[in-house]
Length: 265
Image (cartoon, rainbow, N blue to C red; front, side, top):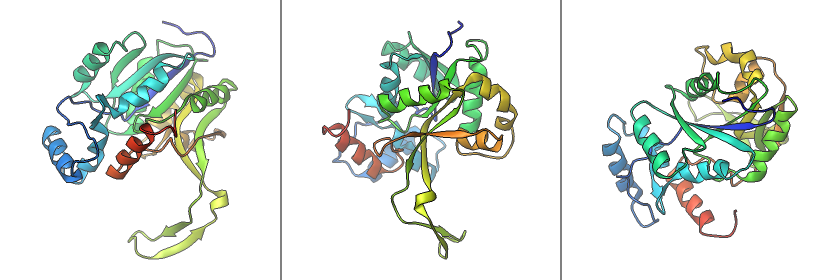
């Protein structure tokens, strides 16, 4: 399949491993109990690594990633969605997408050991499916409250052959600390600080230009760092406070509060 100029493809990174055995979280349960259940389901996770498994929790019948997926699925500008998972959960994710009838617009592929590897694998997967001038949006599925405006603004910027990076201005007091996390080194000028979010978007031709940087051993935390390192100019797209990344149990509670209110959507 070859898409026409200006079409957009959403790539969801760090794809959440949906598991129907994960309990529905309604706010009453003890978070430690949830950790324990997820820890036993996800064999091989250490106690520290289990901090990452909150993304797997099902809320109101949907895994958290599905709330994110729906924002791209319903966007008329998006032609195809590539969901990135690991090989252990590939079949389960693919079956779930088919069961929910997303497979007319969604495809599933296997990622890597890191975000950078996962994005690289997804873009390689896309290699013979799209044209060089088609647009790719890379999004972290742990940010389920991405909205239509953010998605469309990313597409507009990337259409102008620029690297679109969703970001918000820093509002808190920021301090740089020593590696021991105890000593203060410096207070930062927050007027010069931006907090990076996703999506991060670009024409496929831009990826081809910097693809060797994706293959380097050094670990960048997102695509904007790779493009910056390659000498590409970044253009910020205005994000918002709702587009936060779910990392802690407090984030899940905040997500539920927002979804149960009229503050978003």
